[in-house]
Image (cartoon, rainbow, N blue to C red; front, side):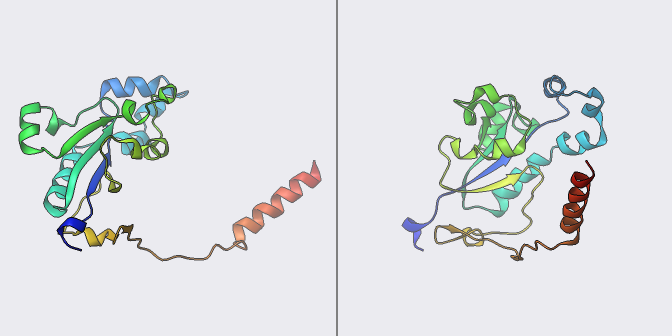
Length: 186
């Protein structure tokens, strides 16, 4: 691939500061059991320790081919970007994209705390390249990468091992048997 044929690649990071009192208050409005707000599970899922800063810095350092980095969040700005002048100087490739932008036309679904719903609308980020890398805020690059680590031509590189779907897994058989027995006894 020569320079004119190089892919334009952006990075997208979803992020939330679950420690933010305004965010907690918003989530509390939708919880039946308010104790869940401060549960260990909620702290692990929504809590943050500024890992977003290291995620961004790792992309800037190890994925130099990335054109823009978009942080998708709900009305929040990570601490390292809160000083606008310093952010523009030190992180000119980084932009904040609010949920209201990607949910345009679907505002009645906001607020949402469902990562799947958010992920399904990432394509609506203004000026997002057709080819982009999606990161969670706690995903860090540790070594130099190149565009060919993620794309072959203009197609994504998929890694992993495909395994067959086994219909005869023991727990599926047990569930089928138990369901049949319950229906029979009703």
